[in-house]
Amino acid sequence: MSQKTIRFRQLTLLIGLLIAAGAFTTPAFASEDQAIEQLRNLNKAFTSIAERVTPTVVTISTRETVSGRGWSRRMPEFFNPYFRMPRGRERQEERPGLGSGIIVTADGYILTNHHVAGRADEITVILNNNEEFEARLVGTDSLTDVAVIKIDAEGLQAAPIGNSDEVQIGEWVMAVGAPLALRSTVTSGIVSALGRSLDVIRDRDGFAVNDFIQTDAAINPGNSGGALINLDGDVIGVNTAIASATGQFVGYGFAIPINLAKKIMDDIVAHGGVRRGFLGIGLRSVDAGLADAFGLDRPRGVFISKVYSDTPADVAGLREGDIILTIDGEEVNRSNHVQSLITRKRPEESVTVKIHRKDRTITLQVKLGEKPSRIGDMATARTPAGQSQFHGLTVSNITPEMAERWGLEVGMEGILVTDVAAGSRAARARFERGDIIFKVRQGNFERDVRTVVDFKASMRKLEKGRNAAFFVRRGTHNLFLTMKTPE
Image (cartoon, rainbow, N blue to C red; front, side, top):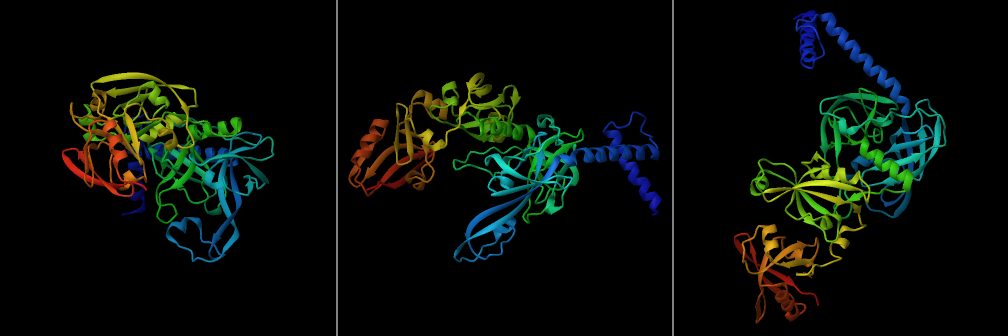
């Protein structure tokens, strides 16, 4: 097969793709010259955007002093999960780092990643024209992996900021940064997916804000903090992570949506820290089984698995078992989407939440609060009437409302386990939320449990330092769980 034939077939395929995308207004029998002209126009778009955007993306060089035990020669950071350093005496060493940043204002505010600059002792910014500046850290937010730094400069070319809420799967994008120390590198690809949750950034309560744009534009170490650009030349994301077992690009990169990153930056600059909206709920996805059990026509929405006491969600009347359908009119089908929408709001702002409850659709107004330093502390700060806590076990009377909320049989005897604290005695004893405790026994002592009052009285009778047996109904099975009372 001749090269001319191969080229003709390739162009025919390209023409078909362009026609399918509506690129031609002429009939399907477009000429080879027309196809080439379309390619030239696309090429001009890429070169024009690259020319405009590369001056707005900087290289960031950092130094961080770390303490550790081991060899003085340090392996690259992406090897750490797989490479155990020999133990030795503790030493102080300087760790160099490299990343990218986006110039957001003409007077030197630069947006980057927390993991690039958030812990650095020294930060150097290198512009596209090779000018160098010492930078200071304005503020950082580890939960979203966003950091803001500042250089003393004027008249800088700032990057145009786009709207990441309008990004669509399949659109062309370009990644700009300094991968592998190759400054001002531009790669291209498409948006592969939206709303990705990598489950790599969480606080100590398990709270996360993961809502990444996924792209197949090549992103490598050093790209972190750089710009993801659309064909309008606008920044739609901050390049942050890659999915790779080697630490190198293998097909997928991830960027923080610019709407979220810009909100975090604005908070840091204006308030010195992030002011994050907070509902006070636990969430899980709605699968086919849960949708069927709760009377939905298909899997949709996000299931509320927990409502913490005295939180905005609790005050507004959200309940465990509710399914969130929309927030401010925007459909939600992923837990991380709910988290992203709420954290873009500030405390004291209100959101309209539409929920599915039994066979009804209810709309509630929720005035957001501010996330406490520890959700666990807040969750146990108040024990409502009819509840009790015992070494990580929270139990409640089975009222008609509780029976309806938890899907229990009316008139069921016992008390309901509504929460089990992680790492507690109750968790180690394998108690689960939804268990029904109906009897307690220790030695010759045995007592039926029908109310929380019965449970408290039984707990007072138990001998300290000994195991007690709890008779539990879990679904259709009866279990015997043992837990040792502390001395």
